[in-house]
Amino acid sequence: MQTVLEFQRVLLKVQASLTVEEVQDLVFLCSDLLSLKDLSTVTSAGQLFSLLENRDLLSWEDPSLLLELLRILKRNSLIRSLTSEDVMPTNGTTYSQQISPYRQLLYELSESICEQDLKNIKFLLLKTLPRKKLEKDTTLLQLFLEMEKEDLLVENNLDVLQKIIADINPSLEKRIIQYKTESFDIMEEQVDRLSLTEGAAAVSGGTSVNLQYNIMLDQYEMKGDKRGVCLIINNCDFKDCGLRNRDGTDIDKKSLEVVFQWLGFEVLTKQNCDRHQILQVLRDLADRDHTSTDCVVCCVLSHGQIKGIVGVDGQIVTYRELIETLSPSQCPSLFKKPKLFFIQACRGTDDQPAAFPQIFPDDEVMPVSDAAVPRDSIPEMADYLLAMSTVPHYVSYREKDNGTWFIQSLCHNLKLLVPRGVDLLSILTKVNSDVSKKTDKSGLKKQMPQPEFTLTKRVVFPPPKTRPPLP
Image 1 (cartoon, helix red, strand yellow):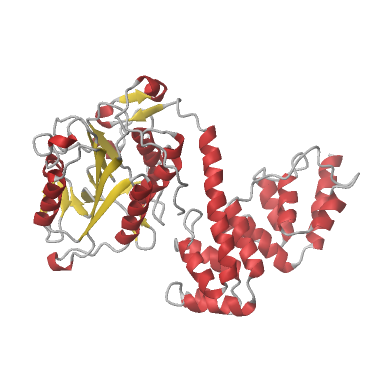
Image 2 (image 1 turned 90 degrees about the horizontal axis):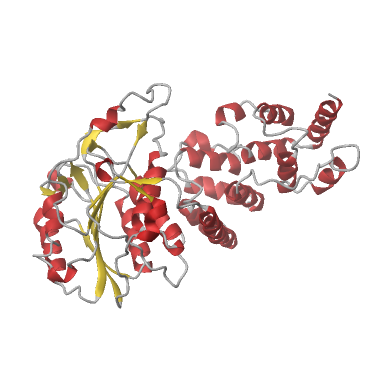
């Protein structure tokens, strides 16, 4: 009881030592630890400390979060006074890492932005954020939170912020670039700790492949002078057939171009293809000599229906038509080589609802599991992968400023896991996991990608000699 009372006295001392601005800084730094609803009611350090204590994030036994927050605020003299004898012994505790590097970066940027710079930032965001969010008394940290709400700013995509900072204060852009580089190093360390031999990788048909047997499976040879061709069909302009344009698809196109070039592919990009042009481009690809290459990749970014993708003329190319163009009879030089298709397209018009454990007991079938795989989706030929952004009957989500959930997760995980020697199906399992955790702003709409394949060996891309491209 005595120690608890002493700790409350410590918190009271800290509260008395902080300015109003520093309290606002602490609220921002804790925005990943507490809900924005709870934080919106905080007007004092004491209220914030109470919320942290109620969530078991702060206590006498573990005061590390308090010390970390004060360190970020550069209140070193206050830390020394708190950790002196008989005030708040650290009990061997070192500074924790509960405040993400991303959150710290935003705070550090705010400390380096002057009042005129802030006015200029608000001006640049006039057409992007509601005017009431850009009022005179809005701080930069509050502005960051508003950008996060609109998905203009996320931990793994600082592109919008980087462009703004480059215009306003170019010297600070270096700090963002440094953060991106350091973030990748951290991701590499995390992958080192991943146990990729545990669990099972879900594959089509309800089958499971235990990852601990991966080492026993053969791999496709990846020893060619060239990795192969990566064809990207990017359909955006659908105005002539009455469908909505696919705003944001160019972000996916650029991400795919950068990643597959890094992986050693010759990238060919075709824009706004109708049905005839899609099939002709694939026939041209089949006519090439692939003898000296290891595999072929085809990425299609378009509207879609349950049986296939839609050209800019509104006409459907079925999945069977799509992949039969590269069959052994049509392209002998790709015989026994992996033919990898990545399809970003809707496969229906339904939204996938979020499923909550308390609503669906373990013995009850989830509504989305009733969707059947169309029989003509993949022919019974070996060495194919058809990785689709969503299961049959459902839509696939695309954000105007960030691209699609599926393609962005695919590119992110290829950059993260290929250097570690992880095979493609395991990477797609990670993509499934990442995309399944995303929701729209309402928290009610979900998405689940679906790989189908007739691969007979593991696909393992050789790690490139250069570092992965930055996000």
